[in-house]
Image (tube, rainbow, N blue to C red):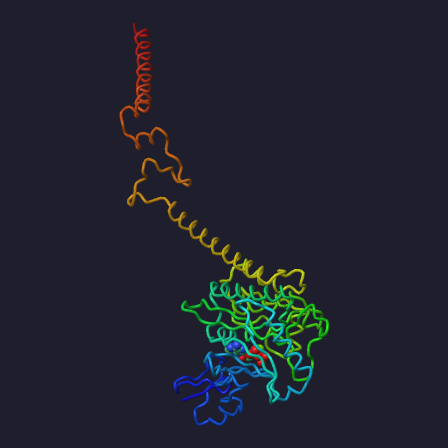
Length: 407
Ligand SMILES: Nc1ncnc2c1ncn2[C@@H]1O[C@H](COP(=O)(O)OP(=O)(O)O)[C@@H](O)[C@H]1O
Ligand SMILES: [Mg+2]
């Protein structure tokens, strides 16, 4: 048996990587390491039996839990014990719970409870999601199909619109914070946006500055907007930029700016144009590329102003590209059909207009070829009759002259 050192899920020996978080699995002999978390196996706040660790971040650990009475699965996120004593950290964690619970949307994680346990653990309880992160899905599947990108983007757009309508700016939108829940249909996953850990409620003036204590990560360089990279005031359009980066990554398999130290990446967001997605994946249409690059404009004013607008524009661009490809194909088919048939293959039918490149036949000959009836051939015979008559007149005149001379 093998187990994932991060989420503690167990697998059979033939599996090497955890499909949920991509960690190399450890064999059962490394059990001490697998079970080192003292909270795993315990009943938390008298209700939640913590059965596995399913996520780990700079500030928190997420556990899968079973409610002892209902047996329903939940996810319990607990602030690291060493941070529980820091007032700012606790306040921020509380804000995460408040921000997420303000948004009632099927594509946003549903948070049901928040509090501090008797032993001093600060926690929040949320719906348990059986799926994998968007990060993991791109790593395993590579660039997504256009249909899947549209399907996922539509849902991210709805989630962000709902958050923005409640004045919540996520500020840490990235594929690790988006989960895909498989459905019966392949590539038709339900999307959930999670981790409002550094979200900001706009109307809230008591905490406008992000938490900047050491060892607390504020956003992720690869997905940060230029204004975030410069430490400026953010609004919803910063999330729209991060959303654009996510679409770019689904299209090409990687974000536009990656590799190198954080400072270099942030500088690129602030000052450099993203590389053309079509250079990475040539089959991307110019329309789709234009939409993605517009969402990555340095100036928030030049981006789509709502997340769902970006998703919609992307869909229109894809449909436009599809209809153009179809029209091109139809035109090619038409061109094939208009090639003049060879004499052996097929003689032109009477109703067929002559191909434009072929010189039209003499009307007389054409009428003969086409119809062949004696009536239609009359002008042709008349012409020869006149010629014969003229020759005879000339002959008679010539004979007459000869006769008069020799008389
Ligand atoms: N409700 C949930 N159900 C299942 N897995 C979850 C849930 N919430 C978080 N996770 C897993 O835990 C990871 C970390 O959770 P997150 O809320 O992003 O914490 P952090 O603030 O530490 O980044 C996620 O990437 C995901 O894999
Ligand atoms: Mg996270």
